[in-house]
View 1 (cartoon, rainbow, N blue to C red):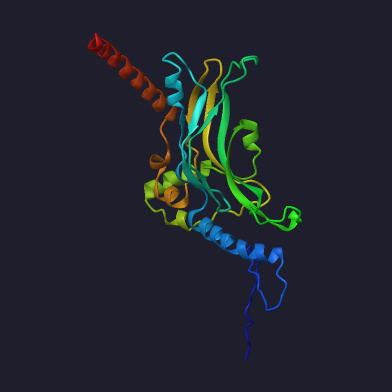
View 2 (tube, helix red, strand yellow):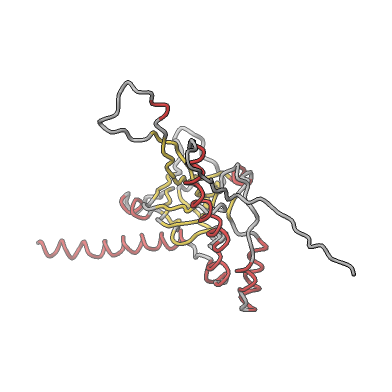
Length: 279
């Protein structure tokens, strides 16, 4: 009688849990591993369920308030990033709570280019080591090397040139294949295959950027020519359930400019009435 041996293979994961024992000396590595395990576990689950991309908000528009304040004939090279939240490819949340304004106006001493310049706006996580806060009872002569530190999460938003953006190793952005599959799913109305797919593993040694917008600047005319947000990747539920019509943004630069013009027209119509009323 023949017997079959079962085949088993093991593979290591990135989840590590320290095991403590009575009387052992607990080191800093043990405590750091214990505190990192819940975060690693949450990132693994978040990345599997939602992938990477924009969760909500993070719209890029012209800066109409600044443009309006400078007068009806003024042009502006400023754009505004609105608050929102995204997930990078590792599963880290990227939260922006206040508006961020970029001003691409060049130094007047520099030569102005005759062709529009293309920049790419992206966001990434940044961790900064900060010293632990001390209280009034701390001995000023004590050794401060053993007081530990704190890691604080920051979010950095950067405008890349075209050459810089293409050299990034990890960017969460829609590809041509993604767009083709989105259009196909919209016709077939079957998002299940998309929701079951897993993203490829990220390179842990490099920054993970999330693409927000492509901006074309016309320095000769001193204005933002185009704000293109069609290549923004959203998290898996939005990406899989919404087709291109539900994800692609309209021309935000044109909408913002029209809003400014309407405000100016309304303000000009109200000024004569207020003057006649005072007289």
